[in-house]
Length: 299
Image 1 (spheres, rainbow, N blue to C red):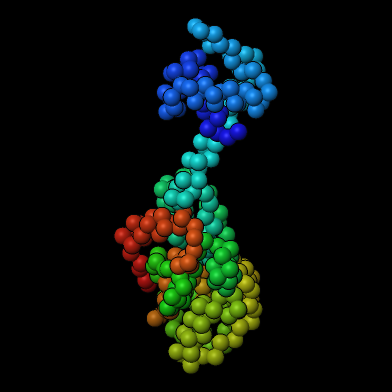
Image 2 (image 1 turned 30 degrees about the horizontal axis):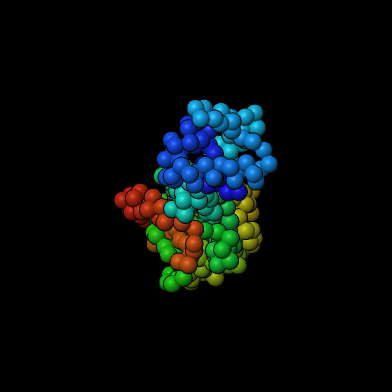
């Protein structure tokens, strides 16, 4: 027995008329009557009482009607859901992002996507940049907000913002009152930065900036997370060059200063071109409508 048999029985139960029920399911009456008889035989139970004038449900028929309606409702809902998932209107999307993106583009991007696709469950994964790259490659993320890394033919990318480095120092540090900072001012300073194995874009930018002033950087501590870097600076253990997007919410006792010719880097939304999640295209559409219009700005 399948849903076609159930729909035939429901039509009869709701009309209590073989002719009307047959018309509802686009059948002529004789084969429809045989269909109902076959259902009763298959179940081994009488579902309807019928005579020349009346059709009535038996007690078993009333119970079977309720069960058929529940099954058909669930089946129809499943059919609707699979169509919605296939069109990207429903389902889930795993979005990775760098920690400092939570201070800039992620809140707006999440809001825009939630408004556009309220039935898609957005799973947020806060990760370090190298983990994001690996997870995208392995298919453990559907999309991510990370640093732009130049040509990546296997990734679809969209520029969301342009960030740049700024210097943070403890309050009372010799550079705390400087209007701007040039690379040579970092000579002799203990630097705190994430290792290249965690954030290669940031580490490369820091090294290049120091080299521009003839400074060989001395990395005293290399924590993985930017928040840890800020806390170490707060304790007076060194200074750090961090994304400007983190400088609006610094810990007490930490001062941000502008770097002359600060290194810039793109923050992009990216996703594998070979990805199969139909919920991803609308993420790019939502981001494009807002961030492209807003434009990326620098120092």
